[in-house]
Image (cartoon, rainbow, N blue to C red; front, top):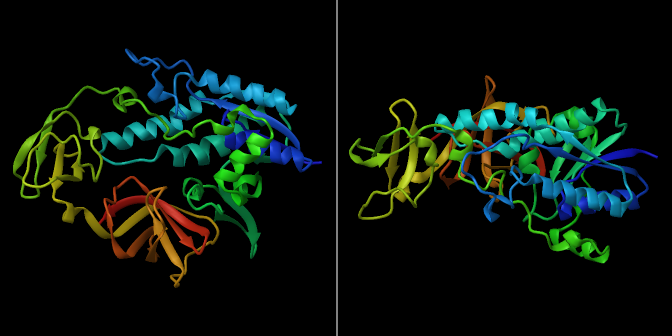
Length: 359
């Protein structure tokens, strides 16, 4: 009988994941990563807005919930302190990228290096013995043509393969994702049938739902908001307060809505323009990771997306000197440097990388 360590968050997905594996005869162990640590954010109250996030000051509530779930399922449970690793890998990268005017996705790095990296590593370091690691992600794994593959979940509205594109072959070899064959509706129904209190618990919506300035911990830095011709339209207090494609909260008036087109770290300026200027058709990406294939062949069934909730778009992909160029067949709105682009061949995750530029 194989032993599986399940990452428990206190939510419905990881709970049902553990339950399904136990029903299949696995020896199941539950574990939760503690990532908040002793962090204190001056003047921040624990408000409702922070509760639907992964990184939050009241994580103890989720840990208590996960402990109760483990007791209910009759499985051993461990809390693993990953706060230092989370700070070094996720938060420092997040801060560095935002201060450069880029748009990082902390969940990408958290999944590859913390949830599927530090968490199982810390468990083994503490003497917890297991054969496989499992989570409640909506994605599927397999083995084809001598390589471990990652596929989209069958529920395309909940598919989380985008967040997992940085997993290595070694990680894919040793994980189980039992929810990939189910829809979210089915998972909640399973939880209700089991009488689990978390059946209708809301999903975590972001990695942090407070003001990002609470994490960046930098003083305001005044700069100018300019149009494409360099005309000054207003002032701002830091390029990190803006994201590519942002329309609301710019504080400048115009004959028609203005959107953030780019963020310039060199002169601390926010460049804005009209909606038609937000569309790009091509991007380049670096820091690549190949997943289901060791290379990409530009065939008819190649798609790509640069947001987790985006429907993959038809594209053509070329790779040269460790740089991936993605040319979409249709124009795409607000491609931002720092985001991840993930390339699919059919429903399989082929590769992905960090967007460097778009045009």
